[in-house]
Each structure stands twice: as structure tokens, then as C-alpha cells.
Length: 133
Image 1: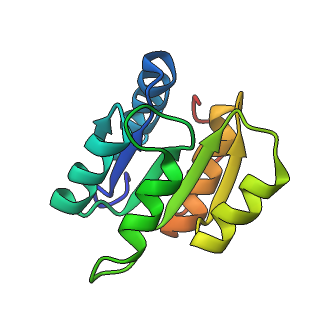
Image 2: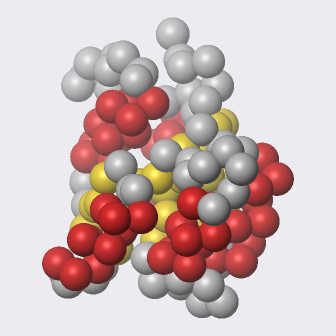
């Protein structure tokens, strides 16, 4: 049985990554929202209040860090967040963790790794490893 339609907001400027994540996560039963830059991500997050945010670090208009800083100060506090990035810097990871991200995943990554992280954060029972990922 799919999760009770948990909502995940994907914020990334890379169309290929967004579409890959969307396909896998919709197949797992999640409701997916998409934003293609930091400003749009912030607007959608504040309007929709998703259960989870998958956020790219480097984007046009507003970086993932600026989005996190803004969301951290909102009345409901920070939405559980997984940051994805092609950046190798440990300082960036440390700053992301200081801002409260729940997981930090370097690109490229296996979709199964993202799904496991989402299931853990949302406390969704895994449906087994035989599912198509």
C-alpha cells in the first residue's frame, strides 16, 4: 500500500534529474511538486507546506542555502530536507547540516539511495528491495 500520499517538493534546475526523481517517486505513491529555481521553490514550499523537500544546492535566482535560511525562519520551522549537490566541499555539507538538512546526497546518485533516505525521513515502511527503482 502506498504512503498516505505524502507530498514531496523537488527543487532543481536540471530537468533530467527532476523528471527521473518525479517518475520514481510518483511510482512509489508520493504526490510530487516541482520548482525549477530557488525562488519558485521557496514560493511553493511556503504555499503547499510539503512533507519533504529535495533541494539542489546550486540553482539560479536563489541557492539551496538561501532557500533553507528563509524556510528555517518560518513559523512552522524547517521542512524536512534532503540536499542534493554536485559539490564535493565538506564546508558546504557542514553548513547544510548546521541549517538542519536531514540528508546530504552527492550527484550523481542512485535513485534507490534517495528513496531509502526519503522512506527513513518520512518514516515510511520500505516495500522491499524488489521494487523497480
